[in-house]
Length: 208
Image (cartoon, rainbow, N blue to C red; front, side, top):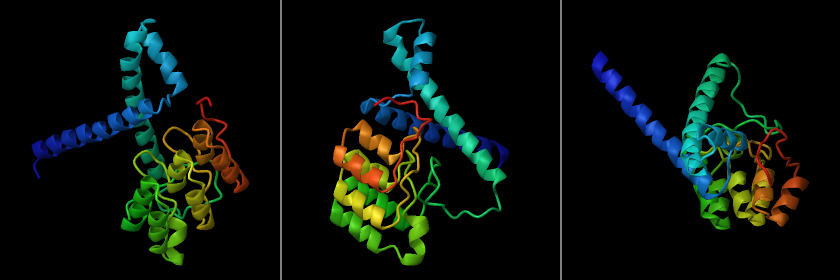
């Protein structure tokens, strides 16, 4: 591939990547989950004009996601050669993005909020695969239990806990499954996740 073509495809890739970031911000706005520090900074950039604040916030949040991706790529590069096995006991770290078909199937099943679909996806994962595949995340860095917590589906949460899903991974907003359940006021889910060892991320800036 020529140098010019490489430049062209690099630009295309960046534009498509930006679409993903803007989509993520749109989802955050629809659920009224905002980065408090960026929201305040957006008001400052808008010179106190609340009508401009949202557009400034979107710019800041998209840049924040880009920065976060770059930092993670740098950290991954520094850790190259080390074991990639996930420690399900680790607290407040992010789960790797799902690439395997089975882990993607589990995330899709969790999004469907259907117990039988989640059970089927878990049954497809062998015992040797379980430790790594059940702890993968989607584009928003939500694991299956983050998604179940959002729905407040205690039946699915219980099933995931029994299948060794890590309980304290954080998503792109720094939220643990417990944080999400609290935010959505799913009290039964809060209780179940807490009993399973779930914790709130003390460094998360979101209010509940």
